[in-house]
Image (cartoon, rainbow, N blue to C red; front, side):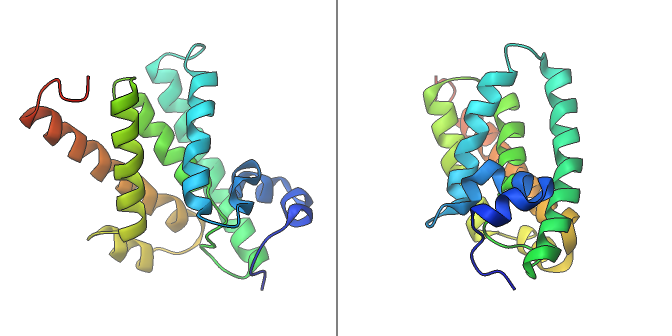
Amino acid sequence: MIVRPNLGFLLAHPAHFIALGFGTGLAPVAPGTVGTVLAFPIYLLLAPWLNVPWMLGTIAAMFVLGVWACEHTGRAMGISDHSGMVWDEVVAMLLILVIVPAGTLWWTAAFFLFRFFDVFKPPPIRYFDQTIKGGFGVMFDDLLAAFYTLLSLAIFHRIFPGALN
């Protein structure tokens, strides 16, 4: 069992490189948060080239890639959902960034809400996190956290229109 992955493990297989978020999952503290931050430069690189349908298709492909990468890496590490595997955070945050309006306040609120839901896993996120195993399970619970984030932002925007603009 690998308790803490290192650079050698990261580079040993393409699945490890992906699942560990290009190395952000090697962060000694809060790798999930560091992995979530990785979504921002990826979004900023892709957004000028891809319209929303292409972005959503790319994110769907990244989800499928993540299922494979996290399944393989989890088996190699001996822990199906190791905290260093952060591709799930990257993909979920990318989805959020495609949907919420661009802007510092929107993105900051989205970031903190997503981290809250991902860490505390309110129902039914915790249920699915504990029930669905393997690569799909790793990826799926973060999609639920993204949904909770988007729902919370939509409700907030409905109650306080223009507050995040």
